[in-house]
Amino acid sequence: MTVDRILRHLSTGQLTVSRIFPGKSLAAIELAIKQSEMNHGGQICFAVEAALGTTALLKKQTAWERAVEVFSQLRVWDTEHNNGVLIYVLLADRDVEIVADRGLNHCVTSDEWEKICHIMESAFRQRQFETGVIAGIQTIDQYLRSHFPVQHEKPVNELSDKPVILK
Image 1: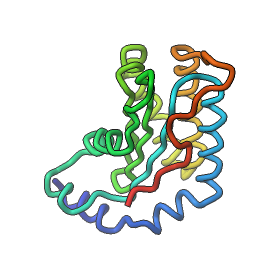
Image 2: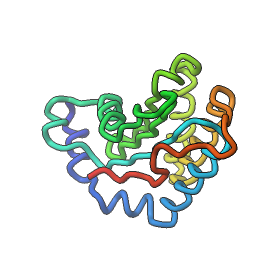
Image 3: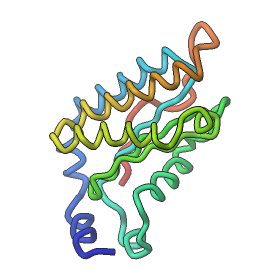
Image 4: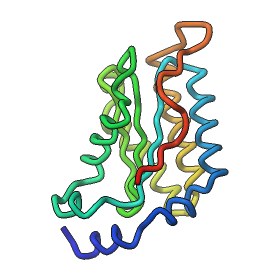
């Protein structure tokens, strides 16, 4: 654990989340998820967290480990076809992680998920947070369309499309 990481986490708070993802951006992200899920049978969840707590920092928890924890807490795994996908953003670490359920993980390689994360992180470095998230959703949409095409007239929405702000 580096002092730099601890300082970043201590200085990154909820105001940072509000500044980077104002209500308008959150509404646009929710709409992008809603529109995407009309095209396939998969489920997309977006969660953003300002920073890790002290205990997690002392345990040297990584963004990936936290993303897996959030995947479970938000029950993204609890879909009929095991096709939930979590996009997790940890602002203090400037990190994006994608966790996909087992129904999709055998269809999409970890390298493909990582490419999506890099696309989003690149947009974030240019301060284009909303654009980066929506680009990630659109890329995930392509995989979900391919592997989980719509089976019913209207896809069932098993998870909320509303972005989750973790505190």
